[in-house]
Length: 148
Image 1 (cartoon, rainbow, N blue to C red):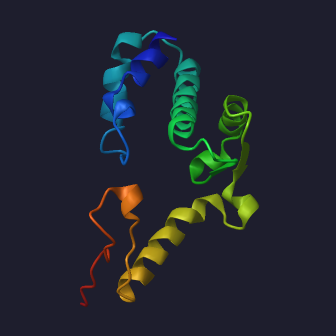
Image 2: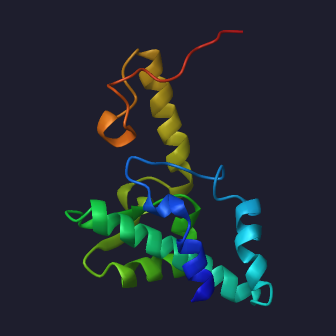
Image 3: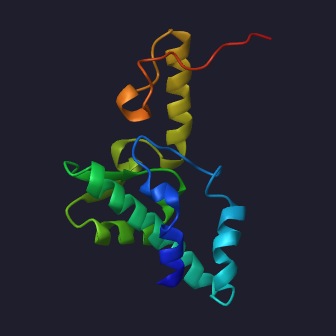
């Protein structure tokens, strides 16, 4: 519980939407710093705590910004983690938890498909953003083409 509380104390979790992050914040260096006071914890307990952090973050986001949601579709590597899917379902009893596979797209192909769609939008000179999601001032064509 103390490790989970320390991880959840990360200021990012309190920031208003829209927000986005990744390895720029949640890096191995970040994790090493957070784990320093918990050096005696067993590896399996740390792994379980990181899974629970993911579950809590998803549940909190849906609770504050996804009240009308009826389904959580998981993609990426997390969709291959049966334990994570079970924990998400337990934490979100009012939602159906599924993977993108159930909707016709392999979980490990979603990011590639998204970037292919963004490239297509750029080539057609069409916006690739949703201002209400990204916080941008308006629709924008994203990216550029630099022929060799």
